[in-house]
Length: 302
Image (tube, rainbow, N blue to C red):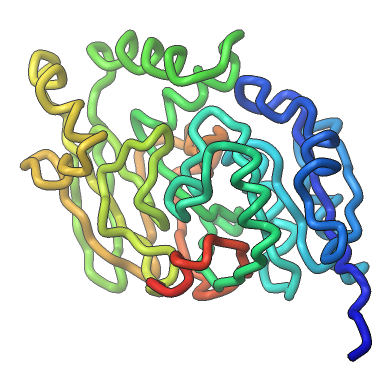
C-alpha cells in the first residue's frame, strides 16, 4: 500500500493571548506533533484581524487543519476565515477563558491538546452571526459586554483580573430594557445581560447554560436578571457547579433567529471580544458550518 503524504497543518499563534502559555509552541510542535501524519508551518498574528486573513488564505490553499494557539478571541478570528470551508479548526488553548475548548473537552494541557490533533477526529459544529459578524462560542449584550470592554484594556490578563473587574462593576450597573423577536415571537425583558450561547461554557469552567449544544442547530438565548449584591456571594459558585440556570434569575429560550432592539447602540461581545454595534441586532444560526478537531469520545456523544 502506498503511504499517503503528510497533511498540511498550519498553527496560527497569537503572541499576546491570555497568560503566555503559547510561548514555546514551535518546540511543542517539534516534540509532540506526529510528523508522519502532518507537515506543519507556523504563522504569528501581528494585529487584530490578521488571524482571519491567514486562515482564509490557508483554506483557499487547501490546508487541511488550522490550529488556533490562543484564546476564544483568536479562535473567533480563525473561524471567521474557515466557516463554510472543508478546512478543520483545531485548538491549543492558551487564552484567559478558553470557553470553546473547554466545552469540546480539549485538554488545557498543551501537550495533551496536541495529542488530540494527532488523533484527528473531526466533528461538525454550528456557528452564528450577529449583524453579519461571526461568533462560535458565546456572544452577548449588557453587563458581560461591559465587562469584556474593560477587560480588553486591562493591563493584566487572567481570571483574577476578570473577577476583579466584574465585582467592581456589578453594583453600579443598571439592568436594561430589551425588545426581542425570537423565531417570530415578541418578548420584552429587563435584564442584567442577554447571552447568545452556542456552547455551555462562558470560560474558566463557568456556565449559565449547561445544556447548550454546539451541534443542535439552535442558539440558546440566556436572559439573566440582576440579583441583590449580597446574593452573588451565595449564587456565584453555582456558575462553577453548572447549576446557575436553575435559579429564578435565568431564563433560557432556544432560537434560530433573534432580532434584539435596545435604546442605545453600544458594546456587545463576540466570543469575549468587545465590539460596538447599533440599536438593532440580528442573530442567526449557521448549522453545522465548521469542522473541528475534537477528542474521539466527544464526537461519539454528538
